[in-house]
Amino acid sequence: MIATRVIVAAFALAGLLLAPAAVRAHAFLDHSDPAVGSTVPASPAVIHLWFTQQVEPAFSSVTVTDQSGASMNDGASAIDPSNQSELDVKLKHLTAGTYTVKWHVLSVDTHTTEGDFTFHVGKG
Image (cartoon, rainbow, N blue to C red; front, side):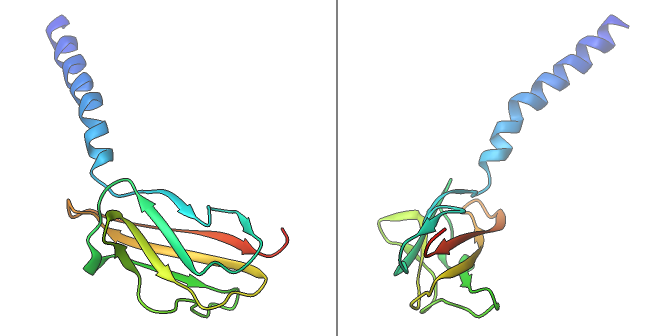
């Protein structure tokens, strides 16, 4: 009985120790510019997304859409050559309103993640 409890406890401890490694195995959004949920006074020229690890450029993308769902991208998204964990996309001129940023990335360890957030242009 005690041996079983020791074995169960050992497996539970091993699971706890290995869990952080599994979390680090994915590229999650760390921060962005404009920031998630923020209001900016004028149209940004570029959206910058920084991830928790490097991403594969050929399999990673970001799309910015207006309230009607129209794409506001001015070209394809691209990895910053000096920082392989930064994904950028140039934008068309944005008028006052709410915009949705959707991203999908493949991390260098082959795990995919995706997400979305909004930001506002103009007065909050």
